[in-house]
Amino acid sequence: MATKTAVNCSEIRIEVPWGHIAGQWYGDQLQRPILALHGWLDNCGTFAKLAPLLTSYRSILCIDLPGHGLSSHLPIGIQYEALEYVRTILRVMRAYNWKTVSLMGHSMGGAIAFDFAAIYPEHVDLIIGLDIITFRTYSVEDMPTVLEYLIGKNMEFNERLTDKCVAMEPPCYTMEECEHLLHESTDRSINLENCKYILERNVTRSTSHPDKYYFSRDARVKVKRRYNAPPELINEMAKRICRVSIPHLVIKGGKSRIVSNDNTALTDYLQENNKNFVMHTYPPGTHHLHLNNADAVAQIIIKFLQNYDTLRKGQHSVVKAKV
Image (cartoon, rainbow, N blue to C red):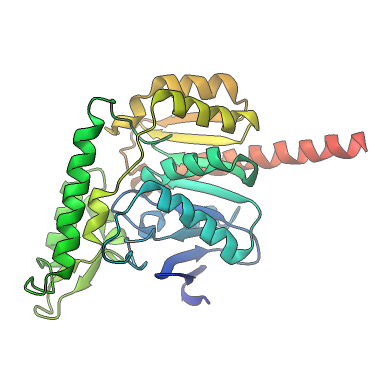
């Protein structure tokens, strides 16, 4: 059920076995929307400036991934992992009875979109990646150390959740302090004035200090476990996307420092083997270019969607001509 909260935007809740997935639906709810997936430690507020600019062309459903924003946290004792977020897409599709999904993702969300499209290529009609294609990979030599760290920290966080001696509330801050903490934690990728859009769904008012807030996302998402795909697997996943020529737009921030943007081999492969792959670099953009430069990013996306619709209509015409 959806409740109206702003012009052209409705809050939604999708029931899942451990609670619910929260989100915001921008635009016409009678048409299948683009499903928007946020980045690591963010929430659907990351699309608060971009999504309204796209609704004249397509509606947008932005969700809080489990453990983020207003979505339920996973049960105590569980470790977050990338494939759980792939399953989240399936849960949303089943909730709305979609046979096909259009995906837009920023950072981690874009990598999840890539993974889903590679696993279910026949059920994805387009991908929009904001400053990412897919996750960075670790060397085989480094991976055991990485796993040791992630498993140990997850155990620590889960023990805190069950330790009754630990204070119920984490450290609290003024809203101004929260904005500065978020700004600095993203390496100043989010402009200070835009931090409020993330914080609206990322903090809760303290009961002990009513003038302060604490970060209410699940601390365990900080040590989310990713499967480490070697180059051979990444290439095979890319092949599955290219095999059906899924329209695929990637918008890179010219000032972004994200490591995964250095995967030039994957970019070259997609450009050479997917005729519908488009790479666009926006020079002034940081990693959060969709939030800081929403107008420019919206123009690029709408042009891509227009080209996609032209392509799709052309394909339908060919089918009709053959019949």
